[in-house]
Image (tube, rainbow, N blue to C red):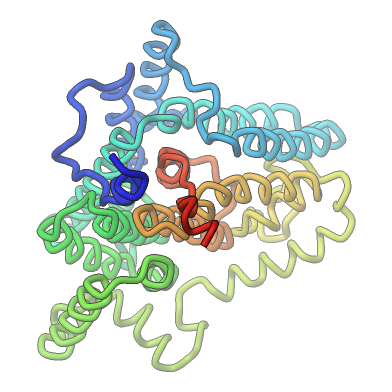
Length: 424
């Protein structure tokens, strides 16, 4: 084969999911189970935060350890930065907890972070591209199932339990949280579009899944979820532009708007009252608990002035706050509880997700996957403004999986100019 032919072959589209290898690495099917269960936060113990997904992760770890198949660098060259970020985050919380005698709370919080940030990547990340794509597809399927379950609870179950549907009829489903459920819907949309753009998903899968995800996001009545979904679609279009993607997004968006105007009854009341009215009036006060969260954020800024070096310790913000609640902003919460060191650790964790997708973004073949990683990383960074500690597996598994997609891509190299071109 000529040099030119080899270069053309290297830039051919990636094989479709139907071409996945029949043999899988150890623990792969258990990893699939862990990923599928990860959004289903409902299946957990009450006494301690251990989910059904965690059990699958532990069993997979045992199998992989027995067979010597644990990855040494689950995030490739960025693994060191990821571990450094975890150590900085944990050290800051440790110093603050020791200074304020909060050792018990520190143990609980750090056990959760260690499991999410160190053990889960050993099972989910560091796999081949075929396996990582398969895991991403399993995650999308799981989120679709979560949305369908929530719809069933709202439309067909009289007086559904509050853990699935809030008192004001906002869908929580198996995630048991409104905003996080909506954000997971947005993440699934991004995964779908990115995989389709890269040739790993079929058009009929988008046509089936996207309406379910869109309606599920509306049922949550979440402004955050709607913003994440719109941002995710926009970023995929910017980072991995194509004519068919633009046409598809325009057709879908136009169809949703047309149906909404033609059949107003299709728009859930909770979405109309919490989201559309606030947008129309340009008044965030109409968007649920925005004012209450702002009070906590203002308090967090005020308290952080004296805790930049040594924080107040793990889970201590709620004990000091006049509102008896943690601030729903991870950046401010870590700054208060772990000082600048913990906050810098969080930043390092997010920076670890940048090298792989940025290195692949210039190459058309890899652009869909790289755009998916960057978009979900940005959604994660934005969502940290809306909840406290982020060790829950229903959120970290999608993040780790998104980073793994770009890390699983082959090393991208620009084709070298031919000798004749050099001497021309």
